[in-house]
Length: 297
Ligand SMILES: Cc1cc2nc3c(=O)[nH]c(=O)nc-3n(C[C@H](O)[C@H](O)[C@H](O)COP(=O)(O)OP(=O)(O)OC[C@H]3O[C@@H](n4cnc5c(N)ncnc54)[C@H](O)[C@@H]3O)c2cc1C
Image (cartoon, rainbow, N blue to C red; front, side, top):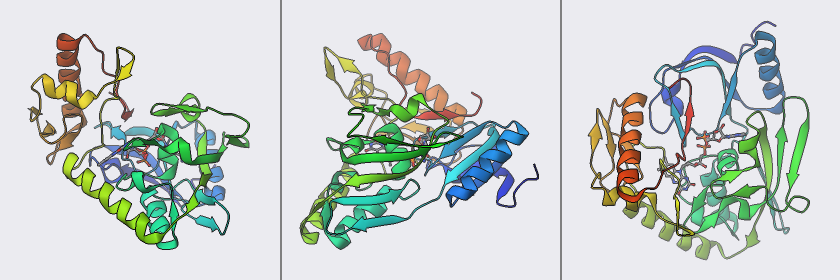
């Protein structure tokens, strides 16, 4: 099949990760419609290319060597607020911050705790993003996807728990592309919504570094039946501020590893090994990565 014009070649992935790291993808496409998604997947199939879906790239560590295949950036962003119903229909590429902003503008509640989450709705559904005690799936009524052949829907009324801590059914099906979702909202006073959003943004600015990162590197592990903070465990090993190359364990929050400028994916991998090793030595706990590695490591 002839390559469609909207698919480009040799695209630097560092531009598509909040960490600013990553080599080139052989093929790359911004997916602005379902028709483009189908066309891009057909091209990948005809050329026998691996594919990888990204949203905002705020939870991804791209390899320094890039990706041998086609990266699809989901860019479908339309939102529809059903008034006076309690539902927001949103495409997967919409930023979570756009949902939060719409809540402040039009007066609905439900997403204030996700203020400052830099990803897309698709990424938040895939990894069941968790912020300030709320999990994204608490707000999902249904999610529509494309499995490479057919469209399908995960509906919470039929399938009560397709998610768990930082995970969802989509992690078991990496070839499913989330297209759109129906989210639960409740009407509320715009001013109160904006006040809550302001508080959450303030808390984030105090607790999280304002330097390039992909958020928390590790999941919070279970210890004696309870989730404990991975950041606290790393902190207790004395690693805050540790550096390899230009990657640093943030002095602000030890589960955030930051790119001080010019860090490589390998610097991050070495820092991950260091933190994991020290936490295991001290607490006999094996930390599991929350971030997604893409490409060859
Ligand atoms: C400063 C900062 C703060 C953060 N704070 C938090 C936080 O409080 N809580 C939290 O949980 N996370 C946090 N994160 C991590 C990150 O923002 C979330 O994991 C976010 O939900 C990822 O969304 P994304 O669009 O960037 O996904 P990406 O990073 O682009 O992708 C992540 C995964 O989702 C998959 N994916 C994305 N879109 C789709 C789709 N449409 N269909 C199928 N699969 C898809 C990708 O294939 C990949 O496996 C933070 C990150 C940063 C940089």
